[in-house]
Image (cartoon, rainbow over the protein chains, first blue to last red):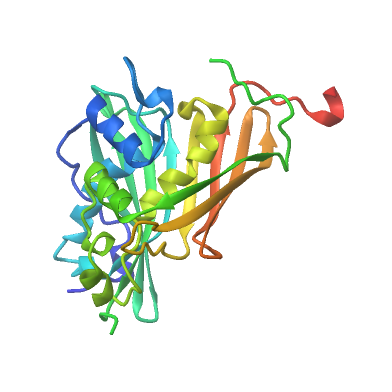
Length: 141
Length: 150
């Protein structure tokens, strides 16, 4: 099997719940070299792009889908958009649900557009992460 | 929360620029923090195997750092309601003490009530590494419109 344009609309089950912690938020902010005080202290929020940590768990499902026959080492992140309803906070227990929006074939690459919805309790919308990945069919020499 | 930047915000307002040094240490730190352990971000061998000129920064690291331009300016990161980039070129990070510098700049490209769009540029080695990078910020307070309220 291989990925085709017909895979648009393919949906994946939600990831296992992710527990957001103050320690992980602080570690992530430090990795960005970001000393914003809102990421630390008694009631921190997560840096906006922390959403990628959770989205990536859903992307991995897609990359590993045997139906699509993708090679992870030939996938490049082409673009990324986040739409935030509210920031992530310690204590949030969230899941990520991925779907393929569109597949385009361009030369030796497939361009895969996918949306991951990050939701909290009672399906509370928190963030949507839309990404395009380019998958090269042949390994570069 | 007080929005400190509303006064004087208009299309063309420049945000304070920022230069950030990307080193291998930063990539390893981000790999651990983000749980993205793709070896092209720490191993010449794996980077070379897919035709890259060297170890490259995670696109999400560059995206995350670029947003500091906006969150430093607005103060409260929860005011960011949207953020999008294209990864146009990889940031190649040499295995030495200096790494590579990335220069970030930002300017207001649209104002609509309390919603402000900031366009961000990121330059490494003379080349744009992010394309169409835009953050949408809700300042929570309607930005005075110069033509009517000045």
